[in-house]
Image (cartoon, rainbow, N blue to C red; front, top):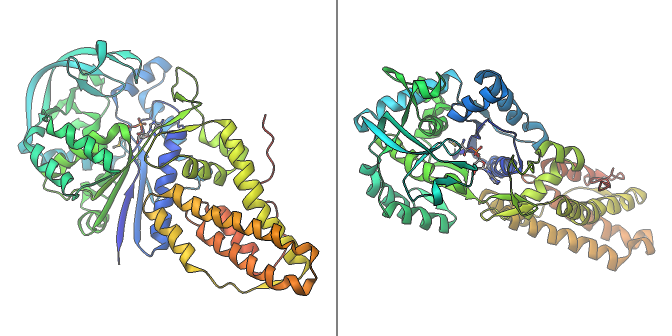
Length: 474
Ligand code: ME8
């Protein structure tokens, strides 16, 4: 049986989930559903990244313990499962015991590439990254709106430089396939400028006792990226030699990480080097999505434009938000969210086109006592499935909606309501079957609507409840 292991990145838990996170979760969910439909045995993972130093800072500011902070925010991410209709198999937290075991095991396996050194450098706690003088203008991180701090301390280092050529060749040859192509080129250019060794631990005093202890050295905690990246295998019980690891990492040709454009370096370089050092298999591909802005501005707590995905679902419903993220946002490039566009898309594509099509056809179908035995037009369904599996969600939905529009046009042209019952029986039967096919094609994208459409267009036709009821824009 063919297998695939699919993962999202694991968000930090020092802030609320936003629609950028929802984008990645929904993209991975559509892929997971598509591969399931294609008959693959799949394992789909998401979770939260909880050992960052910035959590210590945030908890201090909020006057709560770090554990309370991570519990509270991790739950908010986990709670996106219902409103976004996510079908993942596991939600891992990097504060889980099995993750600690996996991370420490990997560290031990990298032992020959780890050494201790005193280091002085510029650090952004928001990025959890060291920078060199000149990396960022005025040593200011615009992403996190903070001045870089100078830090001098004794840390463990990982001999990343040793893996430069090997990693470049794995990427060049697509043994690690990076999509889209321009991200592959970007990272190759970065690697070819030369890789320095990286610091992979922080003194326990700076971490205030938070984070995963370095094996055999309680005075140091693992650098959060070293620990976070191992989530992809600790979730498979790597630490305890579990069956999942055997099944989905060792004996599995497809291991796919979906990530945002800001964390390619960590996945395409650090993670690969760690796995090579530990003599483990590497993932097969990275799919890199772009960033969503809100009304043209970067999503930021300071600007105050963090939109809770669940609040959008409360207004428009799960499938409407999924539709926006999949159709309006091109999978690999930056996109924008606005309430205005959300409302527009909801009204035009979902309520007026798809919803209306279902109401019209089932209304007439009920009046004429139409009975449908479905015969599926596989070509459309296969094409939509193929697009979903290939991360081409916008194209997949576009093609389905061409069919939706075509059907609506046919109805307008034929005017079944002005024909005799006998004259329209054929037309209605054919149209309802086509709508049933559309319903099936939508399955990985809009699972709930897909099911409603399928149920409403099979057997004895009954007038269907509105798929996308009117929403008033407040
Ligand atoms: O990077 N639009 O966590 P994170 C689209 N903990 N995607 C966005 C986005 C936006 N505006 N903002 C963030 C981390 N993302 C690490 C990951 S993985 C071992 C550790 C994406 O909460 C971002 O690119 O900053 C990443 O893929 C994910 O959301 C989590 O971001």
